[in-house]
Image 1 (cartoon, one colour):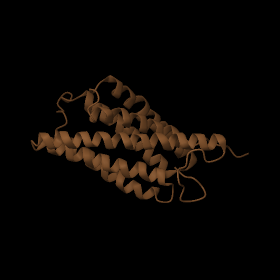
Image 2 (cartoon, rainbow, N blue to C red):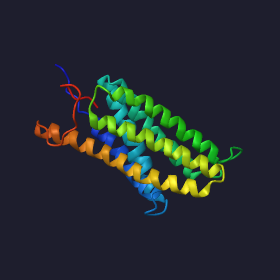
Image 3 (cartoon, rainbow, N blue to C red):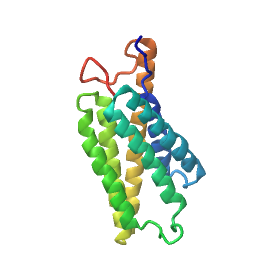
Image 4 (cartoon, rainbow, N blue to C red):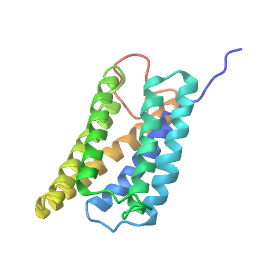
Length: 200
């Protein structure tokens, strides 16, 4: 008998989306950085996405495994950077140049992963392209701070915050669309699939 497996994408997308919205409301200047963001980053942004990646591995979905596991580990690594600003032991803290390089590498990874969405659906394509833009904006922000361009860094950081909220909400939308469409066995929220079979 074949085993029917649940679609892990909504779990991973919700973990990513909600955490991204919460962090970028901070980046946009709505509130300060605190344990609320860190806790969600560890549990939902980090662990939930890793679980989703493992579930996608079980389904044989290489793209989903790579994406969800990588972004789950991204959130865990970002939390470590934030809670250890001065480093630990003989290891110094992360500099703004280093974090700029960190965000650039994640932007490059995301931009390349975007091409893996081209046969999926428009909603998923929007999530990945907007995320790549977000990472590159954060790269510019941290590089500007490192170079002493405080005003530029602040302005780009605020822009990144608003763009990040849009990115996160798009992931939440896609997650809820996949749940509701499957539950009702019809299109409740459109995701504009590129093929007859939805992939995420």
